[in-house]
Length: 328
Image (cartoon, rainbow, N blue to C red; front, side, top):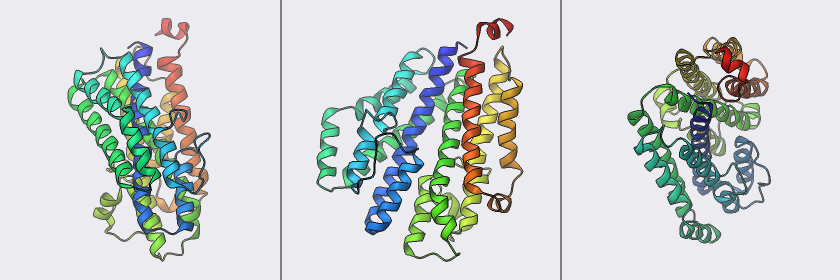
């Protein structure tokens, strides 16, 4: 596969996953506004910014609607939802011949929907007036469209090397995002809890699970008994839940192995070691072992390892030297 094709498919998938993650965080926290005090609002929205990597020039000023507008529509912010969808659509345009017609129609339709001037102006007016209904409806439409694109991709695109690069982009972005999300919540919630939850703490734990689409799945495993160790275990180590870190890294490793089988350059030893080490750290660890150490350092280590895997993928499959290409 040409490096430019692999690059575009990879980033198309990463940008869509990033947009869906930001959309979910905003949707969850806008809904939680109905049950929060001013003090808890400050904490929650600061956590949103931290979970999104503290985007440059986006600050919490005490106005959740202004922050929502910045994180959703500000095209000067490259991490905004609209910016991510624009970037995903541009990458898909570069590889129009490599994706299915259904994929293109789904993504192009989402792009046209979210860039309509009248849509944005209506939403800006409603959020300025303090109405939460229209922003939430917009966010839910975006989430549904991204989920539909993922479903269309799985059902209409041949599961060859190109599809595997889409999986790599999706799951490396998801793993890093989940680690950032847990880090944003950990210091305040895990560090301060004594095992009993008051009303605000329960909402915070529920908000964390909903931010990872995990509340219902968690309740099916553990019932609605929200305890810190079980929440961390579920979001880190559950082997079957699609937004857990272990599931994401297992899926990433599977996609990289499939690419190895099809690529002339193979699955080089540095990438094998990086991905295998991260997978093993999640497959053979218990939540007690993780919680007995510095959990923040552990989560940041996962983010560093994801970045190292990203850089190695680029060295092997995208930005490789002519010597490497000739050797392959």
